[in-house]
Length: 148
Image (cartoon, rainbow, N blue to C red):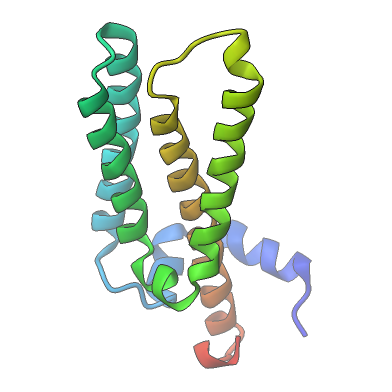
């Protein structure tokens, strides 16, 4: 049985591109990097939108695009393990609830729910990255993907 230390060493020593290849991701690695860069640009655009004129339509489009990109980035994970997306959604809901019930009394942020869409996207991508690392680790250990 592999230990946590072996897993951590594998992650530290193996480039991310190699882990993606070992996990048999369907797109080429630069496509995933592009998706992540677009997601970051969307976050900057959302912040600019809220500080400049606060258009709800623009914020809605940006939030929806962030969620779509996150689901696209880890589409196979979303289909095989939908509870990971539900957990990320629950965390985003908790952030929104904390803001709506408590923090909104101290400061007002228009379209805060769009930031919650980014919370979902960030947490889901984190979970997807963990799944990729685990799959790649099993492959490196000589196991099959079905044995995880």
